[in-house]
Length: 59
Image (cartoon, rainbow, N blue to C red):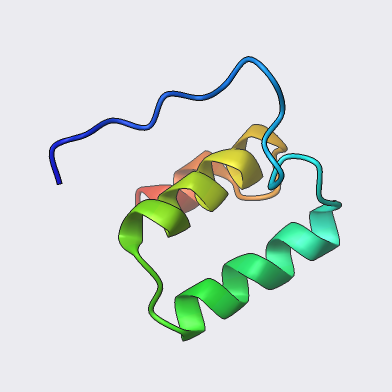
């Protein structure tokens, strides 16, 4: 797809979730083979919260 996700200045619904809730959604999204764009958005939030080490993303 030829579009770029532009974050809103307001927190998204995903950003309002607890760490545990967001990790659960990430696991379910991967398991369900959700859109790579959706998974990337979740990964960006998890990385911003330091829940996924950045060196893990390079592996």
